[in-house]
Image 1: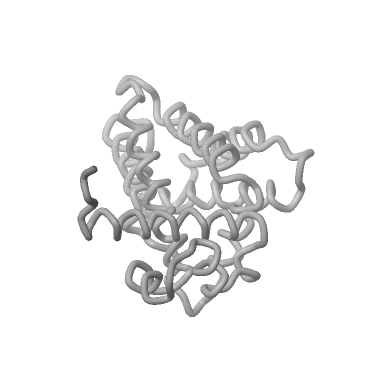
Image 2 (image 1 turned 45 degrees about the horizontal axis):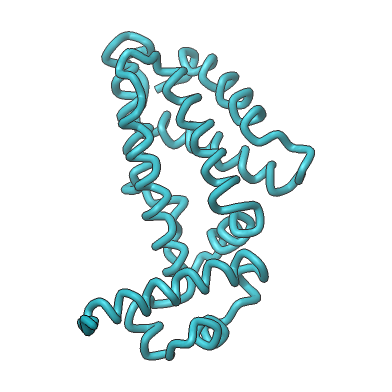
Length: 201
């Protein structure tokens, strides 16, 4: 039997803490889960927890790295011939499906709640995230090929599109099962995109 290295054991411990914490956040809500409970349920120690994460909020940041990796991989599947609006709608649909099916309503509610904590780093406002870079690239390409006016503010427009995403997800969490997430997301962003040509720079 091959003995595991110290690095392998540490990685297994990190993954166990990580998956346990996400499950607890999903079932109990972020604010109702303590580090002590995560440590106990994951059969680890506080020293192990803080060796991998600075706080329970840091686990959300780790999850968002996975989400951004999904965006990066999805964009590679898009045809370069797609028009700007079609790219945005395709990204919206992929995003909403992924967040709904892979994260779920309970975990997303915890994500939004924790994102309002001012004392913590805010992943929603992190302009270095892959999502914002992807949106900015789409906007820049649309300007270059004449789909958007040359006066378009790239970063501002990308941020406004991401606001459509966050707003739609917030409504989904607010209105519950009657809210058709993908359908409403496409409707919302389509209306917004039609007004882009009238935007001031």
